[in-house]
Image (cartoon, rainbow, N blue to C red):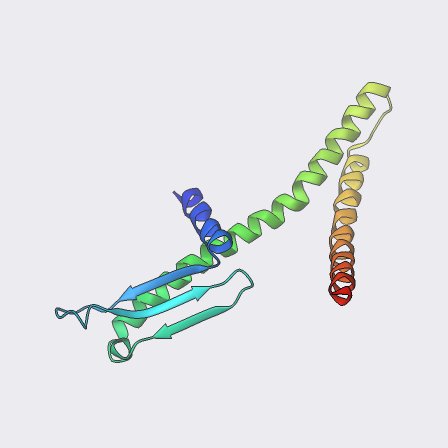
Length: 148
């Protein structure tokens, strides 16, 4: 169930331009059942909230809306942590597996600490490559935009 929620939220966030969360007012008449609170979470991290006048006088609506927003943000935070973990663990695992495969093929004795150091260095290398790639992308975009 959580995987389906994550996929739905990420699709909404990046394909539709943001996650919209609505909470309707509780009421019998048509006017009272309108939208009480609305929140838009954008891909760049902006959160825009609009609260109707009806919801200002009904704290239960605001509380329910905050719970919905907190739930969606919690799911997105867990997804980001998972991606961060994957981005460091997979390269480390692949480098250790490659070192082990090389050691087995060439009959070179490797110690476990050698494999851990190789994996750590590979992860550290990726940690340095990402900011440098971001710097190069910003530099290229500034240069390209200045030509226009």
